[in-house]
Image 1: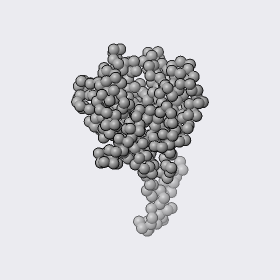
Image 2: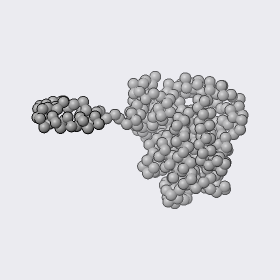
Image 3: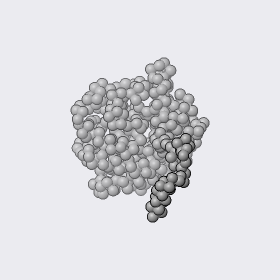
Image 4: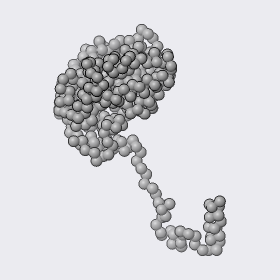
Length: 391
């Protein structure tokens, strides 16, 4: 009613020739009213995050940027000292790291790593459930092992998978672990496949739905996730023990294997791990983890702009193909942002030498370091204030 009366008053003033409130004969030359002034458009959150990551990265030396590219298997001794010396991107913990430990002692151990590193570290673990459990296999941390994804899905479908993700995230977070190398996105319905036991055991569409919801939950819990093993493991043999060659045609991937990865990426997945399989239809010579062509598909076709990482570069599928040092250089040249490494010092020095002699552009190192720092900001490990100093 008030607006209606105000409109009548304005019309009456116009008819009498009197100026309405806020108007004048020289209105055209007056500055625009506050209502008419253009409000500065705020940058979107992703732009703010990217700019903050770039600003932080530019405070790091080339050597520190390179060290951020390594997700290193945590050494058995002097891990804090190594983190302090190199400013390593992250430590990946295995079952041995939890032996003889309690929740209190592992929290203190991880805290010592974080305090030693100049840049907060990613602390990761493979806690998939079922056959791959680094923490819950130890009764000091959980009374029983986490169930496999298949068992959970059979028992309670997607709701039980989500509850399981919540519980894992809570346990890992309570210990100071911020990345779970999960979920497994591989599609397999054949019990004879090597990868079958680690998958959800459903077709591509059902697997994609599960991955989407798991990634969403992990994001809500601020737990880092790693989609694996791109471009899809299929029925291939174990790459821990030798070279696997995938002969499947492109359409098999685009109508099947890619779907869970695409769903996870759409849901906001922060990292994708690339397998060591040689996928003939994408690159008939190089393992996927070392193939620029495979990385181009992940970046351009699936639109992923997060952290791409290798599987461990000392797995026999790689060591049988090329030496560990050469593998690290090839992995960076292929487009990986992080190298999962059980031989950090050797591989770090190999990549540094490749930068120094011109085989790798320093801009390639910075590009990956920015993505790693952005991931750490997404997880709340580093402030997004561009003025924040990396000392």
